Image (cartoon, rainbow, N blue to C red; front, side, top):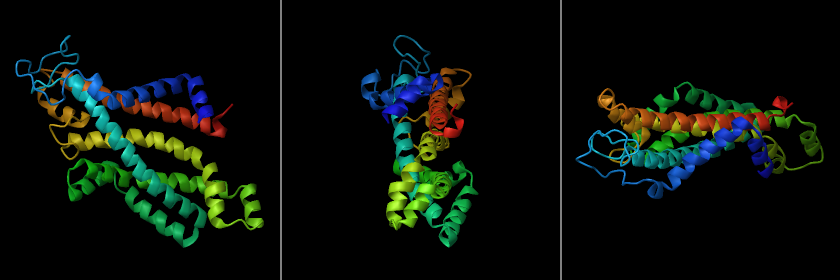
Length: 276
């Protein structure tokens, strides 16, 4: 990890992505300290007030401080993203490892199931799951996590199949090493590079899906702050108070961009084919 961090810091683009990701995580973690106001506190005499010294990014239609709500929205986005990607990576990783190692009918069953899940657009499948489970935050996490499973399954399966054909794995078979040891001690560590890259890229996808669900009213429920729900509420006031839409949208764009940049940098570092 130390070597990986050094490689990222050497890369100009990687540094930008890392700083952006760390900034979002810090803002979310320290939201009660960073935010000047309670995110649900209403200032009746400051409805739709523009950016000022008192309200750095202005207020919304209820007089709530937009900067404070964006800070707390970062906490929600990171929380949902990490848990959802955690669910997707654990289940997807297990299925990908089994499918890539066993192959045959086990591989066919797992991958055909993943193909069925892939047939649905991620936002549509998330909507369907949330509609069935309900609009609680944990259900949003589960829905996004399920959507992430096929991506991780395919990523690790391909890496496992590639690693399985290496000479050192053939040697392990030859000397009678047990299958479980080969899977977890030899194949898995050497197949983790693309999986780690996919983890970073999937975090941005999870944050985008969460914002989309909240925008449609099926994610985080008011008055709790969410970047997606803030965008939805701002539609009626975009001409009168454009800052109510600009700042939440900028938060989503910059966060997703930071994760994608970091993911691209990790891919360049971890993929030996892309090294000079």
